[in-house]
Image 1: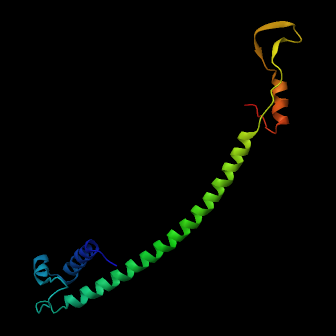
Image 2: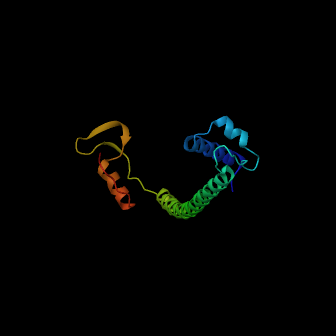
Length: 143
């Protein structure tokens, strides 16, 4: 199905082709133009109306092929979107499960046990933290 703009563009392209192939001036060709096609001209011996109808038929076939390809593409995209939505849903549930995990932290230290130094602020021992995270199933990687 062609729109007015599409038909106008097809007509412009057709007229440009006719001008180059038949060596007729643009003004003469525009004078032969009617709302539905072209009047026959005895000057060039060409049936512009027949050529215009053939041109439109070829254009209609191209438009039909394009619409068919777009419909197939839309169907493929819809299938991919459904697949992506399933993957996103699965990943959201994994994220929710990971976020729901709790880790019981070890007791905070107030000083270094080997040096008997008191620290001005409490801290967690790195090894104790890694053990607590490993017990919760959280893997820790050093950078």
